[in-house]
Amino acid sequence: MTKTIRWFLFSVLLLTLLPALAHAQSGLPDPAAIAGQNLRGHTHMFIAYFICWAMIFGWVVSIARRLGRVEKALNQ
Image 1: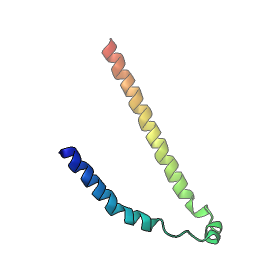
Image 2: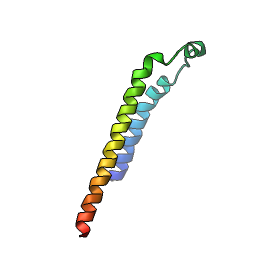
Image 3: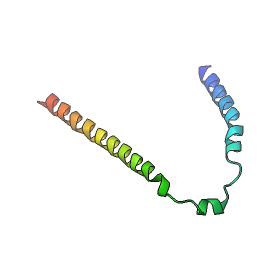
């Protein structure tokens, strides 16, 4: 019974979101406007993304090193 209700609620949610998704996809931008853009003003965004990815990578490496120490301590 609960699985049926869950699928019903999922389908209702999906059907309510479909018109919004279809409306968001309507129309294409002007190709001339896209061709005239440059990325000079967005350099700070590339730097910010690089810093964020570097921090995430450092965090993952830190977790891996600490996990290795915990496993080594448990094996002794």
